[in-house]
Image 1 (cartoon, rainbow, N blue to C red):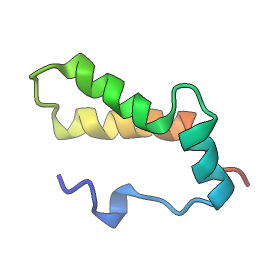
Image 2 (cartoon, rainbow, N blue to C red):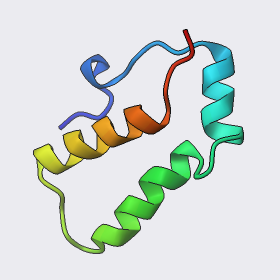
Image 3 (cartoon, helix red, strand yellow):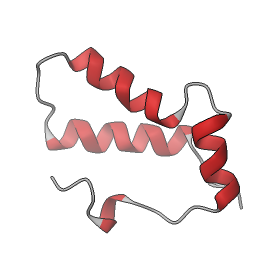
Length: 64
């Protein structure tokens, strides 16, 4: 999986981006780092990554 592929991204307003990285608990980067730490040495399947992405999108919503 190429995590930099645009199909995995989405456009976000500046205020959303700031909120995700500065004001949400856990912060966006912390969300992913905690999951990676939980995995340990296990390599996740593509489906596990997509499921985690869906979870992140539910937490880190875009303001209308």
